[in-house]
Image 1 (cartoon, helix red, strand yellow):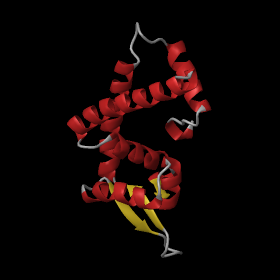
Image 2: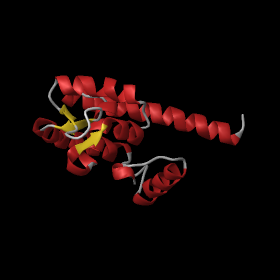
Image 3: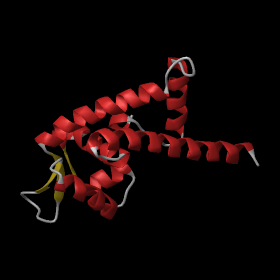
Image 4: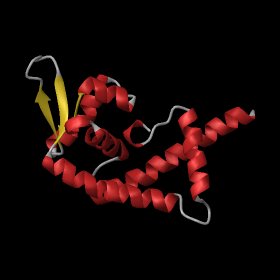
Amino acid sequence: MSDTLDAALRLVRAQAALVRRFDSRLSGLHGVSLADFTLLLRLDEAPGGRMRRVDLAEALGLTASGVTRGLAPLERIGLVTREADARDARVAYASLTTTGRRLLAEMRATAEETAAEIFAAPSWNAEDTGLLSTLLTRLGGTGLAGR
């Protein structure tokens, strides 16, 4: 197996392990998945805490229908609301509710804790995590606020 294929497969397995770990914590404590959390986080980072669904899809690397499917349960439990554009009825915004903002702060604390556990010393130091972040950015990965 080539080094590049080996590296790519290791990255895929590491990503799957991280998703499982975040899903387990977020689901167990807050009833949401990592995908739900990421969607809520993107909305929170948007000006006014709202985004057009098509822009949200692009930011998350999803299709418009994928975003609609992701938003539906979050709307049902009151974390997100749908807002129509006053000037264009074809445009719909997704917006965090007050409850959504409050619970997102709790989810974020859980995610921060989980990340700190994953990248804990002595296995990881600040230089390691900085280098990893730089390398993942080279592959097209973005973090908070698209950084």
